[in-house]
Image (cartoon, rainbow, N blue to C red; front, top):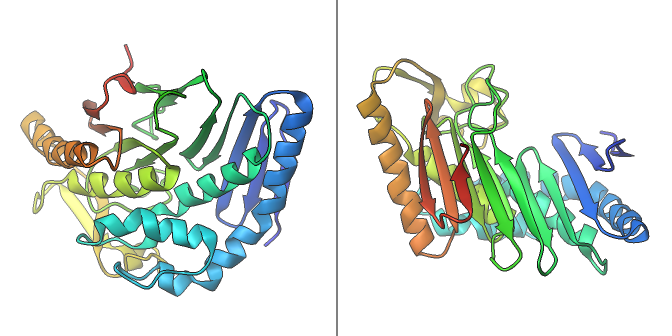
Length: 287
């Protein structure tokens, strides 16, 4: 697979290698931006081969042995706190890659702010006094800004990740055990946000409900780390009370993760209804 690196007309750096597709942006003095992009581009080609070399271990249910590669270890660390549930390190792959590329991009550079967006999982750098606002889309089939994430250099949130249903035709890159349209999480790192978004989205559920059609993950994608575990394939009509009950289950877990210090905030969405957990100054629904 060819490694692709290109500077876009809007000033972002596009990096693509197999399934990894990232957009990077840096703000600061021109020479610093150029050096930052060169550093990210230099670090990028080694990521996918290193992950592929340890893929069987990364697809294994946790707890499992600690892998060797830097990104793989970050995936393992982010997911291990949820080992009492079914989870593999692959639940944090997009966030961990974003964190790794951001670290390469900002190393030794003087930048006001920067981010690496890996398919919607985003790692952010903020210099002192900087803030960044990011729109949240909860329905990929009808994209619109449904909420706003506010990142402030004075607060520890540096990672944003979203998880939810990946039904046929939705464009999702991963499967969910739950029925949430989207769960967006803020955490200290993108890998931590990625893992937490996965487990919270899995918790937004109505077990046994006839409107939920599930299929074994491997029947949809033979390469899925979820194997024969049933994942949500489609979702039929739900009553308002049922939507609220599913969201309440996920919201309770999100609030517990906030109390435990694993995440800072979360926005949960299902069928046009939303719940917010955590710091109200970090996430807000769109007016």
